[in-house]
Image (cartoon, rainbow, N blue to C red; front, top):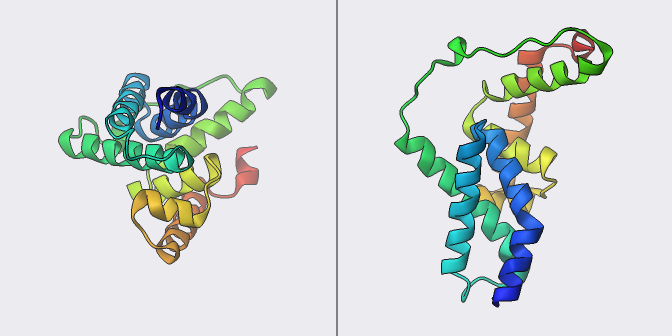
Length: 163
């Protein structure tokens, strides 16, 4: 990979990597750090990474960096103790409330289910690509997406109740 190809990768994929990390970590600074670590690792491996496979490499690296981050951090808060800000109920903030409910529900499902759902529904990856990133086979990816969506449905309840 040349320097110009590396810069192209940064331009094309840095915001997607940031969104992916932010959805998982829910902390802007931590997400920025994951992006930086990911692109630093790409730079170190630039001779062996092909521009055509760089996107998959970046998401795989970001995912593994987040896993490493979770392993080294000690939980500071119990999930039940998390506080979410309440917005006044208006038409303009109805969608925000729905997103907050979904994001809160995402924190309550397993890490692998959250990862595969975010990669599939937010980033648009195929089952095979998600398998490459997470190290799961395609069947495991499908099962985790199904179970994660079912868990979200159970947590949130009927979506019509939220609207």
